Image (cartoon, rainbow, N blue to C red; front, side, top):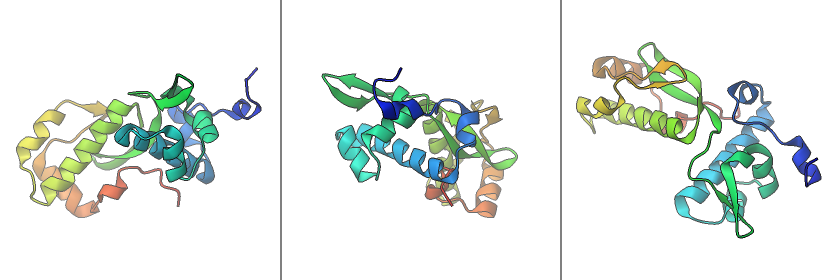
Length: 170
């Protein structure tokens, strides 16, 4: 039995199949929860302040991402890493694909790859920037490291930094 009544509707957000079935409203809520956790990690502010900044509550964070937070001295703080799932845009040899990415480390890898790809297309970095992504896969999809193919993909699809998370509520 849950300690609090509202925890009885807790969502299991570490399974891609569950997150993929979220309604539009649940996806938007989950996006705000991830943003609050990320904000708290990045800036060091309290989780409750990060929740307010991102338009959510501690109750909602505990319901959607309880596995990503710890309790220390009575306070809720985000863990250094998590296993939350997000729908993200990935540049693969087959073009741009949307995949379910599980875990903070993999989400950061996808972010770094997409941003490096965009910066390469803008001429800000050279092809050697893709060396760190060789033989890396995310959700069974190989990250593209061919500079010519990446350039064609980025020019054809014109992704922006805001296109990283594909689970934006429409």
